Length: 298
Image (cartoon, rainbow, N blue to C red):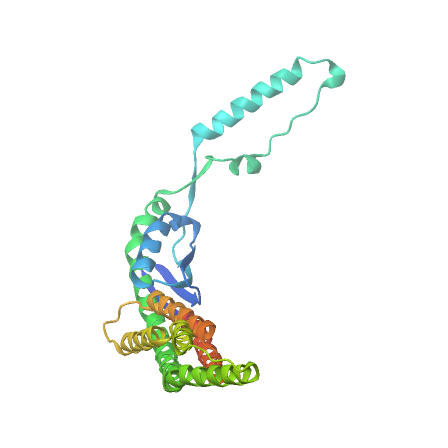
């Protein structure tokens, strides 16, 4: 489901801002964007997101702005190690012939960019621990606001799902009413056809054989179980939508929508009647709508 939530706070001279965005996705797919100074909080923030949200492409963005001046310290040992290595290289050049000698210039600014030379000061080293509590708290608050937005969207989706479910129920009622007459009409058509053919040949057909043929057709065209399961799935969906337990139901609804389509396809394959076929086409259209909508449900 789509949604957005944000929260901000200033603690100990540092302003924290957290944004959480959610897009439709049948799975939980988090993307966490943090300032480099607090990158170590990524695992804890993902755990917090998983506790609050179960589906969707989730993007968490944390921004920090400090009103204090922060300095870096030079690691003397690392810098001296780099200089000693450069001196060794320089001595190797000195031992070559004059025409191969080259002037070596050391750029101190470039040395500061080497790994391990410039390190955070004591204040920045403690920043991760100081930022943990406010960032986690703001993330939870932003998730609560996102869930509030999702709840409003979910209410509208729930109403549409109930509407589509009611439509499917109406078409199922038409199919259930029509189904018993299909076998009787087949029996009558088969009887008339046989009588017409036998009249020309002046023969008689065994009533037992005719009854057996009708029984085989009736067994093959029986859709009572499929209709019952369709109704049961629709009742389950309605129960989930009207439930107030707050538990995630998206994956359950997704599974039920697939089962609805499977039963509808089975009825379509068994049916040998134009009226039932038309009703099932409408049923499958409504089920496709249900499948699309449940992808947006948490």
